[in-house]
Length: 209
Image (cartoon, rainbow, N blue to C red; front, side, top):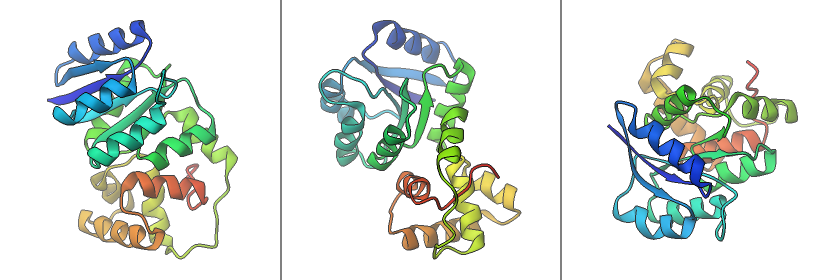
């Protein structure tokens, strides 16, 4: 069972998301909030597996909310669900600690898949977000990463789990973990979301391939 919390100020959207999650086997909505302040006060007492977070909220923004929640719960999976698709907000959300970024017109089945991916260690992004990032940046060839590490990082940025990366690159899961440990060290980051954010910001990957 995947426990989900929702932070969304639109009553209709919040209710629809709650109904979708509670009506799907394997998912349960354990909390809904219309602002970050109440979420920040309540969620640490009963943490979900995955949080759905809007950006344009009254009071504290979703991005600032991520930072505050991550200081209390550094390992929580926060998945952005917003109408904002510009690169500045995408990078700010990822740098703040979001594990993925979806646009609100994401179909229900894809949203549920994304929640599962986030829960299982993935970093799901809407197709248009990935394409926007790709069209805005070219790969930076001046990097300390090896070719194989770039390949692993590229797969990580596509939201693949360690097992999926291993299968895609025909290497063992343990080898993937070793590469990711080296990637973290070279990029001077300590989490997957930080690695993805830095990879996109510094043009270390090309998501077209």
